[in-house]
Amino acid sequence: MALSQPIYFLKRRARRMSRAEGIPLHEALDRVAREEGFRHWGMLAAQLPSLNTQPSLLRQLSLGDLLLLGGRPGQGKTVASFRLAIEALRQGRDVVVFTLEYTQEEVRRHLRTLGADLTRFAGQLRIDTSDEICAPYVAQALASARPGTVVVIDYLQLLDQRRESPPLAEQIAALRAVARDRELIIGCLAQVDRAFEATGRRVPSLQDVRLPNPVDLSLFTKVCFVHDQRVTFQ
Image (cartoon, rainbow, N blue to C red; front, side, top):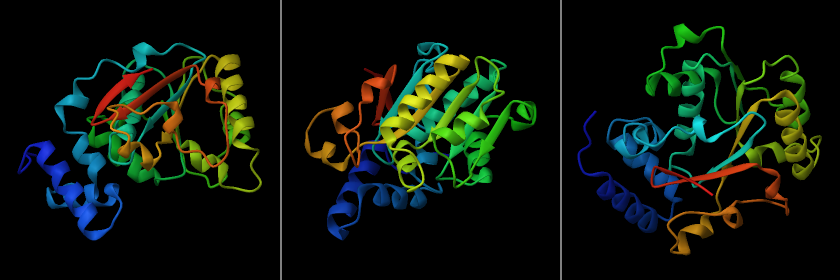
């Protein structure tokens, strides 16, 4: 689907809308995307050449890695995570998506929008949308996962919302142990704080990850951020 204007004009329109109406930037981006015929900005972003031509994310990862994939809303981190899942499926790997944000059908719709023929991967793909998702739940659900399985958790901050769940620091340590001991690749999406937008820096860093309490993010073995539809490893 062709865009009515270049992407930087659309982003500029969204920023003006955000300032004029006092709404969060991600809401303005979603509204602009709907005006262009997409359900939300993430689906529009999936069509952008900059993200489509990014180097393989999976090739940057090794068995046992715990990946932090961070970004502001609307910048493409969900698209990047689903591209990672599709690449893994096409390599014959199993993929498990744990999400507290989307329904199963929304995840499948995202994957189909990105070009995945889900009929080919019926035995490889599992989507878990339980409200009880946390590190112990994930560990139990992955008890029989094959080595090389790629896991996407959407997203990090939501793991800390249930009072019954362990502290987020303990959950990250547990997820790292699961990835290492079972030779999996686990990727956690993470929100970047809105204060990053005022820093003038081109790419976020670990200090910009939004956390309710201090957490040792060095537990992640790989870190990358998505901004302006570009994936940057740190």
